[in-house]
Image (cartoon, rainbow, N blue to C red; front, side):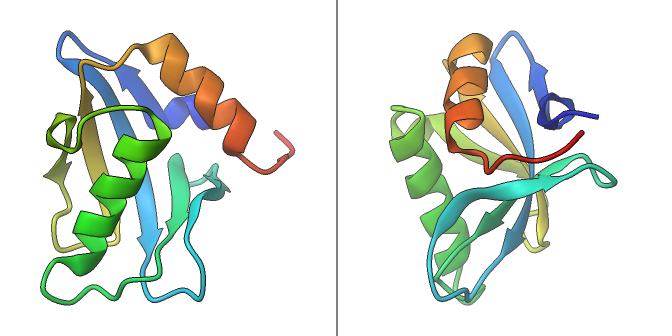
Length: 108
């Protein structure tokens, strides 16, 4: 299995399945890939309080993928650690390349 299982190309952009660990000492986006859950793992420094972790996640993903923050929306899992986000106006191939650069080496 590959981290590509966490991505899906759509007409609106790219869907990405993420598992968030809020309240970490450092931000790590992405921090790994969970092949059982088929989700990209993300560590955020903000706590899941008053939507701070979600905002940090959207801001960080927009920065990494060179998108506007308004192009990054949480479509499932707003109050869960397991989230699905839509990266609107994003090219699947560009997201794939950037994730390959940033993901720690993992064995398939």
